[in-house]
Amino acid sequence: MRPPIPKLADYGISPTHGFLPEVLPLTRLPDPYYNKWEAISANLQALILSKRLRGVVDRLPVLSTIGLEHDAEWRRAYSLLSFMAHGYIWGGDSPSDRLPPAIAVPLLKVSQHLEVPPVATYAAVCLWNFKPLFMDEDIDNLENLASLSTFTGSIDESWFYLVSVAMEARGAPIIPLMLAAIAAARENDATTVTRCLNTFAERLDDLTALLQRMHESCDPFIFYNRIRPFLAGSKNMAEAGLPNGVIYEDGSGTEPYRQYAGGSNAQSSLIQFFDVVLGIEHRPTGEKPSRAPESERGRTPAPKHNFIMEMRRYMPGPHARFLGDVQAVANIRDFVESHRKNQPLCLAYDACLSMLSNLRDKHIAIVTRYIVLPSREVRARSRSRSPEATRRKVNLATASRQPQGIAYDARGAAAAKQGTEKQSNLKGTGGTALISFLKQARDETGEPAIEQWAHRFMSRQIRTEGAGDFFAGKEGEGAGHTEEVEVAGLAGTWTMDDDVGGICNY
Image (cartoon, rainbow, N blue to C red; front, side, top):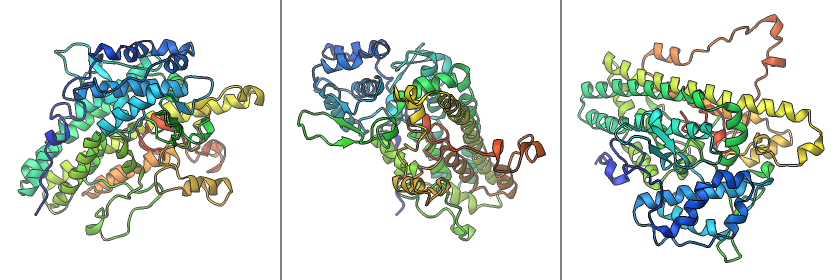
């Protein structure tokens, strides 16, 4: 017996807002008991700037979560505490490896209730951290959105979060649309499936247009050096000053160190939904496509430790379960492959793959501009400084150039350090170089294409101007060398092709 098609209401997913909450996020907790949290949030940027946040939090009493009633209140508390936690950890001259009970105790309880890790996830900074400026206008309009909390108070930081919010809102109708397509495929209704796929492709083009607006109000220098450090997690962050992770103090005195990845767009359930419903499968970074017969390709389950799969642990529990249940009923790819003579159907399916591949191309360009190029500038500046000046303060922007993503393979890193394994061979959990990961994910998007022209179109190599020029030098020398940059947290995984992951893995 075939499993039933998931119902959105069973997972708290809105047919109009998608993975954004049906009830808009609260701008303030209604119970005055939590005024202390709200006061710190309202002054978070000033407290970080003056380096007084840790002192204020250390004097804060441990507040109970018993006053939180509705889901919207739990989400607001989670977002508040997550921002406070990351501000506390990264808001000093050196990171703190301990979270005091005033943050740790309620954050652990709230996280358990919402089925999310006690860290600033994509849900904390994007999904549950926005408000519309005008209630009678749509929330997929960037000009109608504002962030509730930020670390820096900058327009750049708000815009960075809000682009993702607008994309979530604009892409929300795709969810019920493609569930209807799955139902139609079960009934052998090719006309309905084709219509759904055509609409899906058009909506993907809208998402690409939104993503390309990132540069309008988010400056790469400010993002890389001012915003990104606060989004880092505590896993594989030895270079940044957290060799063991962070202790969440609960008063017992026996608390272990905990390690979590920072917020990442790879934690967006929407983009993973696109992959699942279209039958796109991602391999560990560096692994080549299977040589199995075409009829058997793509039928093996996704690797259990693949970075993209690992990111589901950082999604709200119901959202992650929804993706798993959709994966169990996804049939669009099989349906299209069994109707190869239906040209409109095949064209519609290939159009979706092409549009999603294009979205990931734009994402790679953004990662290059916001992460790769600034990281090179940081390294160039650091070379001109004396060792003493460099050691005065931990610079997370520089330190996190080292492999620190959640999927980072420590054993592979040790081998590389000893010269026994090259960085390009690291694979498995997806913790190799950022750009390599994103490009492979982009290439994998086009693999299920039906028509040969679609395969050629999505696998084409764009020739860069001057390639092969005598003055450019030999391949692999000088300017022709491509530097792989590995970074952690939301900033590191924001693009789709870097080995560390993509924030939404666009």
